[in-house]
Image (tube, rainbow, N blue to C red; front, side, top):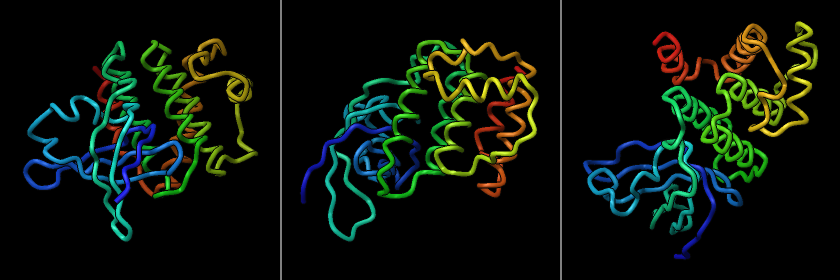
Length: 214
């Protein structure tokens, strides 16, 4: 039973019995995995805050043939959304993690998707404005999956922003100078495309809407 080590992004966790947790994580070189984090629900010594969605981690895990779940040995945080400056930024980290989880296929290596997640996390924790960053993230996610229409009807401001997204890193997206009106226009377009693709609205959207109202 070999031990693998990998760079990974935590996407979500859920309970397995009283103490264990199922952890869904995206590795750079071996795709999306599901693993058991033993006793993670009762003790923080082994995994600490490493299981927060969108945390960039170094993981070690055991994998057996014909077993769907791997066995997590440890997860060491490299960069955490918990260091983000605002509750809204933390809310968007859950949104990004949910969308990556929905799009990433099990064990299908997609380094571009991994890089999008890690670079968006970096932008979040360094204070990049979250609305512009979210539109950047959605645009690239839809493009990488080949579901971004080429014939969208856009205002000139929205067209300029989406063209600029191709040339800048996530942390520099605010330099494109999009107004709140332009970002709202793009958000509505992206939300419709995402909902159509998933056949539902992402669960984390409700949390984002509540954060806006507060």
